[in-house]
Amino acid sequence: MTENKVIKQIKGLDIAKFRELGLVIFIIILSLAVQIRNPRFLTLENLNDMLTNTAILGILAVGMMLVIITRGIDLSVGSTIALSGMITALTVSTYPDMNPILAVLLGTLIGLVCGSVVGLLISKVGILPIIASLGFMNIFRGLTFMTSGGKWISAHQMPVSFKAIATSKVLGINTLIVIAIVTYIVAYYFINHTRTGRQIYAVGSNPESAKISGINTDKILWMVYAIMGALSGLAGVLWVSKFASAQGDTAEGYVMNVIAACVLGGVSISGGSGKISGIILGTLLLGILNNALPLMLVSPFWQNAIQGFIILIAVLVNALVKRNITKQNLMRRKI
Image (tube, rainbow, N blue to C red; front, top):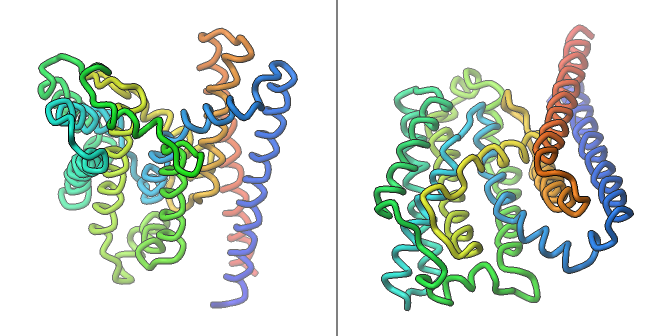
């Protein structure tokens, strides 16, 4: 590796760290401002509730990050959550003695199948990600209503053991938070310490060069959508367990929150860049906003506007950072 390349990587890393540092500072300032307005915000009980409510979003953000890194998008996430959650809920209501772990595996498997189908159309057939996922968003949502017959599964139809998945604790920490932490750890190791993880970034940075260098781009594309589907299936089970309800319109529109968490965390929509630490911060910021704005008695009509404004600022910052990196690269090539 040449000296210029080393310098370029170090500079890019410094800028990424600066962006994340800025996000941390913003989160701290926002938290202190909310605490001044409402002293209940930084209590252990409220922080635990906030992290629990944000855990599912954090799990989904991992999969979406991998998809966006490859220059893709998956709009079928919400529908996959609904379908896997509904089928799992119907299964446990029919077999109340079913082991909760098997229920989690069932939902994850359903999501894996959904994601694999979407991935096959994108990688093998060559359909644009936004078109393929948009089509399956409606297909999976329709299958959810067909499976349930238009009905919904309520709390009293679900066994206590299944509902306990979202309310139980591991070493005093809510199970949803533990699952999110494990997901982050596995994803961090996967994308930073495996060859396949590095290939995902290579495909997103320059698909043509990646293919020429011998990377099976079709397999990489299929894999990231399969992972996204599996995490969506897992999220579907956790969602139904948490809210003790499975409905046809479950998680409708939720995909926008997942994309927002990635964008806030510095994942580039144009592909090729994104970090686990970034999406953790992005997810945390969204969780704080969702928790803090009601505590500050902000009107629900303004809550969406404020979140949208913050997301827009994040996109602008990401664009400026990327432009700065591009200029530095061009200058070093001239040198």
